[in-house]
Image: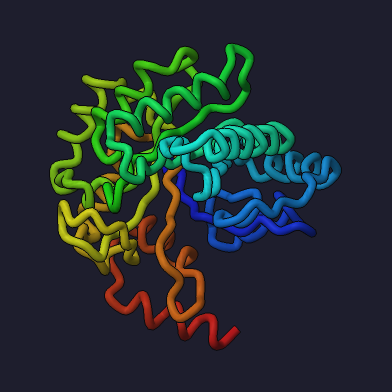
Length: 297
């Protein structure tokens, strides 16, 4: 079964109900949220009443709770422990995000593994592992999905071996899963046109069963550019056919595929990109169609 959706908003007043309604307006059957702004620590309380109503709505829509993905905020950097204060902040804030996931009844939290900011990759990876060993316990209810990164700046996680190191060294690594990002894989140096070879490497080093989410993005960059700039589906360097091959790969069936493509002139592209993906046919006039649609409603 194709599970396709996008990042949607999560606001103070409507919370998960609003996220669901936005998602279904795009004809999605899965989606991803941030429980607050990804760049800051401002968070509103989770409403138990809204959450209960949202769960009933998801059941009615036949959307599995496991297909509702949460993304941790960008400001959480487990890799950078130049001082005790930054370490304590990162651990404390991620614990809060995990608690918010539990309140929402959601079990999959995507996490950027971090940037070492000059400490070196080995130290950065060890810092991320040490933090996860503090955060996770045998009773943890939320999976941490480590995302594959582009390698911009001092990011870790741009190699499959980095993810393997984290998984191998976290004590409760049954709670550690992975999230692939098509743009990030390309920008870090993996050849998307030979996607099955990437899956083969993941399977041999980590296990393909660890993949629990895929971010579907085209890229503005060439392979190995390490820049991380997303493009709309079919309008970047990955190309429509390569992206379709990822989405419909039989080895990744039933895994949520989440669009994080850029807005077009301020308008969300997801309804149209999802339609194009379902039809498996590239629409070269997609961007113009998006603008015209929103201008006329």
